[in-house]
Length: 184
Image (cartoon, rainbow, N blue to C red):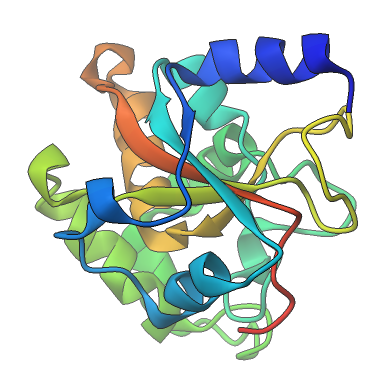
């Protein structure tokens, strides 16, 4: 990775520091998949904040079963595009069955999104884990960083931001290097 590219990306994100341990995050309730990723011997984690909504909305959202209705293969899957699709369909629609099939649309997957959206509170928005996109191992891929953990929370916040761009507050974030852990 070119140092200038890494500095540019980290400048977009805010003040990041390498952290071999989770001492600064020890009171945060971390999902098991994130705990596994953080304890890998060959991994590095940078901790800091995403300072602006523009960068936040550029994050790549995972294409996954259950929510593929928002990530058609021929369409962009950055958080802004995904949230615009969700807004067009509405969370009420997404939380009910409409014959799309569970692989493309699992209404149960969207229930937490609606709950978080309706009761959104930055105090409850725990650390967001991001990583280089699939198939890349550093920050020099030229592609937006991808959300590793926090799909429901990020969609809820993105929907709020589409309503009110001034709603954004910096989000505590971990960058996991090398790339995404393939285990779920």
